[in-house]
Length: 293
Picture 1 (tube, one colour):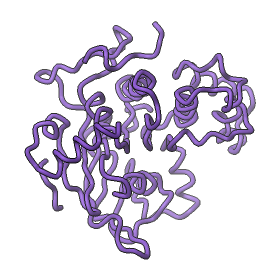
Picture 2 (tube, rainbow, N blue to C red):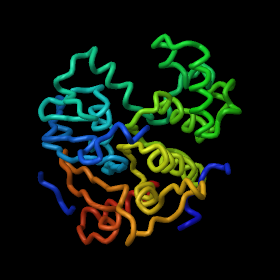
Picture 3 (cartoon, rainbow, N blue to C red):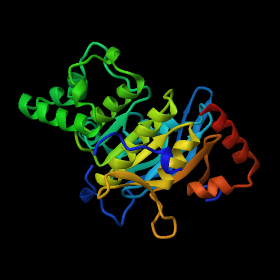
């Protein structure tokens, strides 16, 4: 499995119920309490409660339509739930005005599904888009853009258009755009969807680097169970500048898994517990997810 996650080249049981310095290590960074949201056909999320600790990556799994992406949009303040409370970085989002939400979103990076780059803009313009919107000086924007692209090893593509990039390269540019503000929280919506296994491993390695080098706290929605296990079993070692296997006995888990079913949190625990489960639904889900992935 050591070869399963490659660094980019450089040097619970059933439940009924960028810089880390900015996070209080004693408190969860993200807290969902009884969150409910529904549309004309009924509730998509019903009484969803969970927390995400500092520098933790919570992987959201579930069938199509189970509400994974919806949870990310709620966490980003893009959608308000019908009921319940949400606290992110000490902010009660249901109490914030639209203006205050705009300021809050600068502290959250969002990697949209398929990257969602602007086709008519260059890589430079895509990554620096939000900074231009905020009126930052050109020299500082250029510096920030190059730093972000350097982190995802895409600086050489700074003048290219999205159409000139592979799927994996577009996803890396999307990550660069998400971290341009150096946010302490990053939300990933299916970051490896549609990618070949080697390219998917590169994306997972970048996510590990953000978690373990920059102290990022994350919510990651995916249908790929193998992504959850890679994030749970590996970490980025800054001294060796590479991804290494976590010593399960000596190191606290940095990734936990949450499975949604019928609008509720059906399972929440470490990835190893999911792998060992005897629950019939979860075992079917694992098999079907591996087949899809």
